[in-house]
Image 1 (tube, one colour):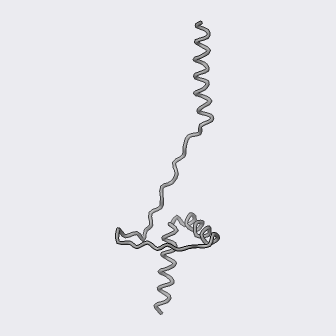
Image 2 (cartoon, rainbow, N blue to C red; image 1 turned 180 degrees about the vertical axis):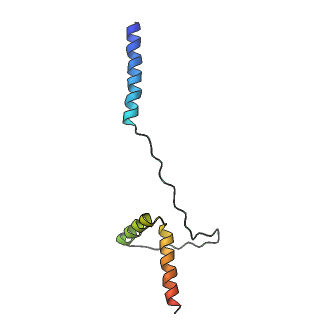
Image 3 (cartoon, rainbow, N blue to C red; image 1 turned 90 degrees about the vertical axis):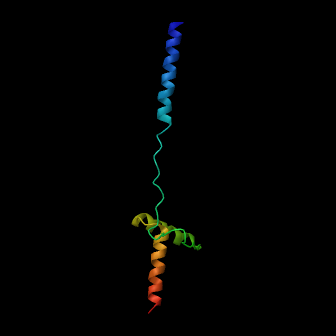
Length: 86
């Protein structure tokens, strides 16, 4: 009976080891980027619709630059409005 108990313990330990191999440790996802243009509660929200390709390009630019998509859009809008003042 002692031999049977020892083999059960080994199976328990083996199950724990297999669980470690099968279940990879979770990696933390990076937190959301915070817009540098966000001032406070009085900010207004603007929703725009983009074609898939433009959205994909904006998302890639966001990742490459480390800026939020909102920051890139706001900077582009500010630049456009500055040109209109001429």
